[in-house]
Image (cartoon, rainbow, N blue to C red; front, side, top):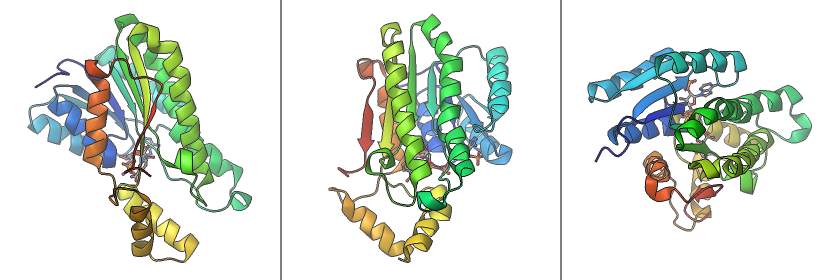
Length: 258
Ligand SMILES: NC(=O)c1ccc[n+]([C@@H]2O[C@H](COP(=O)([O-])OP(=O)(O)OC[C@H]3O[C@@H](n4cnc5c(N)ncnc54)[C@H](OP(=O)(O)O)[C@@H]3O)[C@@H](O)[C@H]2O)c1
């Protein structure tokens, strides 16, 4: 059933990993998908996939860590599409891995720019249109890291804790206009970022093998299972539905009880 027909859904980092799965699921429910990410080839590949399936999708090359780049894409969206109904702040980077004492301050700033400031700017830019339409959904893809604070990941942990504070602050401002704002906090999902950067980084810093780290992380959850991209996308779909209209300001863990 196409419950999101004619709804405009913007997904940052929709070109890969969790974001790509969110795009597929929302498009399947009838939404028009807008992707903001950096790599044109990757972004257009997802757009082509969705269009070949009869869906509507557009790619806007954007660096979420650069406010000028966001400004440019936001003005293109306003000209070409108008307002958006759903904003999914999903793009993020892992950032510097190591103890705080060896973390350059610039590393914190660059992670915050992508994982937090970009999300703030997009919410600030698109919330007035949602208020005007008396409908909107903002979903920030956070992480269990904001709560459990894994070692050697302070910049990432801090960025996600800030994102959860943004969720709560925005939800209070927007609730009376029919707009909900929530965070989803996934546990580990084997996306490209994890396989290519985070797992090798954790292995290098701890001296343990990637297999041992994966096993240990899996055992931390009550379900003894890793989270999947599909589970996140299905939760996004529900939070965007009318049935979830009274859920706001929440940080919803999707991490098997961890
Ligand atoms: N995977 C996990 O285990 C896990 C767990 C908890 C939370 N999360 C959260 O889930 C979200 C998605 O993570 P993922 O694992 O799917 O990551 P991913 O596979 O690396 O995908 C991230 C996407 O974000 C885009 N991106 C990165 N930096 C960007 C920038 N500066 N500007 C615009 N786009 C940018 C990338 O596209 P381009 O390279 O083309 O820009 C990519 O498509 C993140 O917020 C992450 O923190 C993931």
